[in-house]
Length: 238
Image 1 (cartoon, one colour):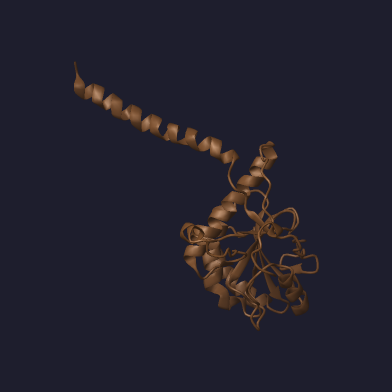
Image 2 (cartoon, one colour):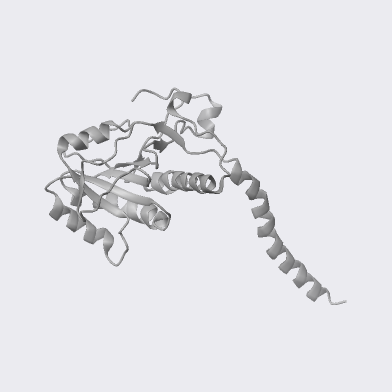
C-alpha cells in the first residue's frame, strides 16, 4: 500500500473540504446577523445644493458616506485620502453607493486641487463634491445625530453613513465586550473619524459591509430582522 499517496489524498481532501465546511457553518448566520442601527431618522436631503458636474446629486435612494470639508477642502487631504483608500475604493462597485462631500460655494478651485490628489489614475465618479450656502450647510449638519461640531470653517474630520431612506446609520451601543461585562453605561458611534485609521478600517468598513448585506437580503426577500432605532436605547440626546 502506498501510504505516501494516501496521505497526499487525505491532505488534499482536508484542504478542499475545510473551507466548504466553514462556509456552511457561516451560511445560516447570514440570515440572523444584527443590522446596522438607525441612530437618526431626520436627515435632510441636499436638494438645495449644486454639484461641480451639474448633476442632480441627492441622498435619497443611495447609500451615502457624507462628509464636510469646509472652506479649505485641500486642508482635508489626509481625511480624504483615508476615506478613499479605506472606504471608497472598497465599496465603489456596489450599487447606489456614493461619497458626498459638502463644501461652501466659492471653493471650486480648492476642490479641483483635492480631486487631483485623490483621483490620479482612479475612478472617482461615485465621489461628489456639492456646494451650498453656509447656513444651508449648518442646517444639514444639524439634522445629523453627532457628538461633534463643525469648526469655524464648516469642516469636520468625521463622516456619516446615510441609508436610502435618509436614515443615519451607526452604533447605538459601541461598548467593548469588556465594558459590557462591567456594565458600563452605553455610548454610541454616530460618525467615523477619518483621521483615525483603525476606526475607519475596523469599524466603518464593517458597518458599511453590514448595511450592504441588509439591502442585498432585502432584494432577495430574506431580510426579516427589525433594525434597532435610537428610541430603543437611551444613548444620549442629540
